[in-house]
Image (cartoon, rainbow, N blue to C red; front, side, top):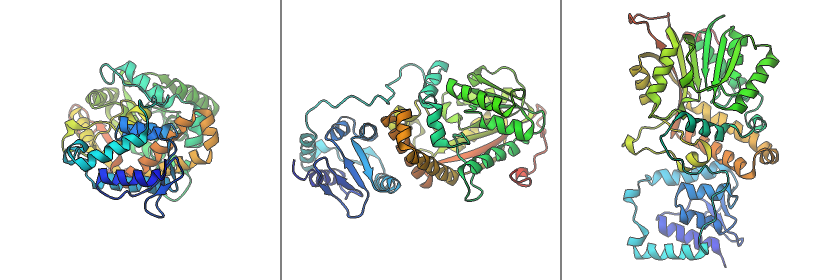
Length: 434
């Protein structure tokens, strides 16, 4: 096929009605598009078949994971240009002209099908989670979803996250290391929770034990950490033993809904509530409220999305749902605060740290790219590509305020309604980082 890139560029611009913001390099070596722009590399016609069979995000994701689609040049710039292109058009399918209703578009679509080659499309990459059935967010289904994302090997996570082994937004008080920024985040949470010697802390979604270790070592807390990941739990227990903190920390493979040994003085939930889902979020808030003593504090650290005009129409992105966080859901910060209040909490502080997550993700991507060959060996080439795309695209989304992340501090007030513990406005600022 002669000059496939020019033909594809013309077809794409005819179908979309605007110039492409990136260059295209096709499998025949031809190239077309704006000079100096990042290059979208189509290594095989199979990528087109995937995109035609599943138009939109899922087809593109399958081609990327399979290695049939790539980016040459600055990945962030490419994603930023494509994001601008998509979001500027509004993303409203109701306003689009269907190709079959316009003769010129119909001809362009036929040409694209001819270039793509014979059907059917190839099977989805092995890294994809197949469609799930049954009710959302049952205990079994949640455990399977968590296992897909977290049980991919602790060695792989060490490459990406670095020595801190913290898989949530860091807190960048200065232009320092990722490890220092993660330590500062953990310390900020401990101060917001007003932890002191002997306090009982429940860490919901404890990951590899970093929060539990920090709270026990630096503040003398007695910590119970719960996770659904067996690999995380094993790793956390070894770290705790190495730190000599087994008398202060217990790690359980347990659903938060099964925790029954309250009351706790404080609860931390860091990057876990995104897995809960809106059908279970009030139950989540009720359960954590019941586990706190009167006057106890909850720190809920959670990614948020922008509100939708029609909230009932919200759905998770196909790429995230099939390859990254099965059944994960994001809620607007207003809904999170309202639900916590409906459960009985008094929300005392909300801190938005959106820009901090973009910086964190860029450091994780840099770690992955610096250890690319090892990352592929530890998981698979497809899994490594999933993570690179997901983290880089997420960084762009945070930078563009498509999503945010917030720390919500809430207090369980006594039945009398009086304040349970003295809480001056942002008292934790006075002590500074340890």
